[in-house]
Figure (cartoon, rainbow, N blue to C red):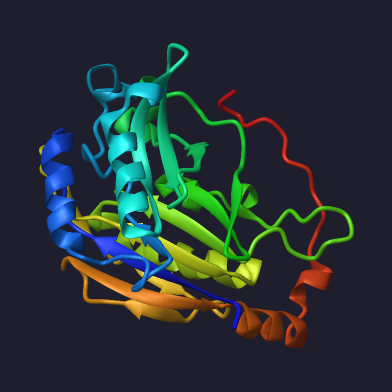
Length: 271
């Protein structure tokens, strides 16, 4: 069976307090490990909340206590641990998604689309490269929050002679409750248009600025149908399965990819 199990960790976050968030997450996760799941997905900026205080809270990549914590959790639990962190590197600041495997390997993706309505584009630097990771035979496109609004960035871009670039799209977020309907709609739209699974993990609770988050974390299949969709505003950890055989069967039965437009990505307007 070509399958991958993934756990969505929808939780509240402690504002700008990495140590407290590490302890909080360890308590929430309990003894869950690789026997329960292949991939554990945490929200965007899971160690601080969506802070714009990048100069105060972004840590150098090589010295980041949160990156080290994520690696230690992945190794101890025997599963991938992933979520985004504020990182400083080379004098620049990134909202960086970290993909930590049980064998100690790290893959990173820097958020491309910075949420200007919160001033993120003034406090962080734009990522330049899309990133697809492969784990247990499943190809996953990494993304962070506001990226979800930009379908060209997330569109399948297969190499010549291939039909698909990825099998699942992963998006971690701090997506506010007033815009929960776009979040839910876009997760399903990305799944439908790319004939792929979509994993979306958002936080709940309220941050120090009084912004509320509804969660609405979802695992969506290639037809846009939610496989995980719990009531809003509640914390939870739930595991679902990505079935590549079912995905391949649907892609063959409904080959919309054969009519897709070829395109080339150009530098973003903000560059």
